Amino acid sequence: MLTRSGLTYAGFARRAGLDRSTLSQLLTGPMPRLPRAETLVQIARTARVSVDWLLGLSQRSEMETEIIEAVMRFEPYGQSPAEDPYLGWVKAAQGLRICTVPASFPDLLKNETVLRTEFPEAFSVPRGNAVEAVAQRLDILRQPYQQHEVANSREAFIGFAAGAGRWSVLDAATRRTALEHMTAITEELYPSFRVYLYDSGTTFSAPFTVFGAQRVAVFLGPSYLLLNAASHVEMFARRFDDLIRGAVVQPHEFAGFLKDLTGRVG
Image 1: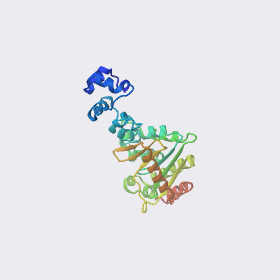
Image 2 (image 1 turned 180 degrees about the vertical axis):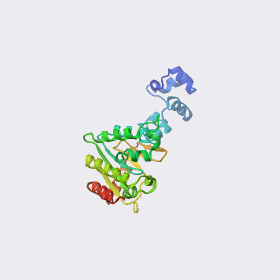
Image 3 (image 1 turned 135 degrees about the horizontal axis):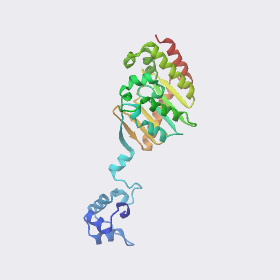
Image 4 (image 1 turned 180 degrees about the horizontal axis):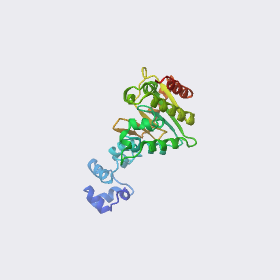
């Protein structure tokens, strides 16, 4: 305990508000006595460990606030794939199963025109380029043994093909080209990249990604809620499996679905 605090007996005792002799009696000898509750709290605070750990009741030495930070924290979203911490999490999970429920549809399926429409500030100087960030994700997915699954609403792609909402600024020819790009990427990466489409009329999900057994990132818009506890990872993994079990378009059908949409544009 003294070693991890970096203090001497005298320094530790002074910071904890204890006599050096009292501290020595507590920490040494064949029959160390149990201190009073307030003394135990002072020692724990000074050593930055939990009281439970001092008493041998827990294997985790972190204080309660540090335990919370270890399993849950917020990460800012930079409003662009080029400034997104997501890429780092993907790299850390290479070789593991990555399961994504995107906010719209996967960035890696978007060509430059679509990215410029959705993230115009990402292409301004001195901010990074979204195309380069997406290309890095594609390079990772092209690596052997990479497994990336997506559960997406069918209506997200139907809305894009129809030029609905934000996509209304793209003319029919531009949307067709973008859909052809999506099809080419899908056919190149399948089956290591698999897209399941669910019906948003009967199913809803907040956007999130499960990175193997490492972590879950829940997309909140201006930030991510990052969860690292095994119980959280398992819960979101089960939710993802529920989504793909109810899919109305299976991965082997997705490229054909895109081609059909392309044929109906304009």
